[in-house]
Length: 138
View 1 (cartoon, rainbow, N blue to C red):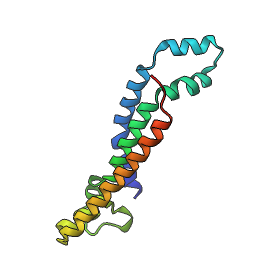
View 2 (spheres, rainbow, N blue to C red):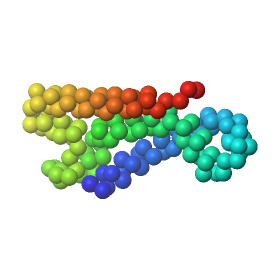
View 3 (cartoon, one colour):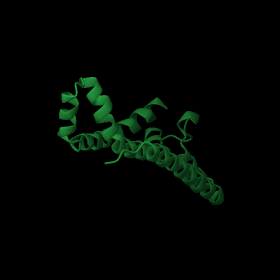
C-alpha cells in the first residue's frame, strides 16, 4: 500500500505546486509592505497575509486532491499486474472495475459508482460549506 500512496502523491505534487506558486504570485506586494510597516516579522506575515490569501487556492487543491484520491485506479492496476490484488491495495474504483468487468455484477458495480459519487459530492459540499464560513472579502 505504501507504494500506491507514494506513486499517487508523486502524481499530484507537481500540479499542486504549480497551483500554489500561481496563488503566491497573486498576492499583492502591498499587503506584505503594509504588514512590514505595522511591525510584522516573517512568521506573522506568513500567518496573517500569506495563509489567508492562499485560502481559495488551498481549498481548490484540497478538493481536487481528495477527489483524485477517491478515484485512484491506475496505481494499483499498474503496480500489481498479478491478480488478485493484495487486500490493502484494493481501492473503491478498482473494486468497482473488478465487480463490473470480471465478475459481471453490473448492478452492484453501478451501485458502488453511485455510492462513490455520493461520497465525493458530500465531501465536496462539506468543504464548500467550511470554505464559505472562512471566506475573506477580496
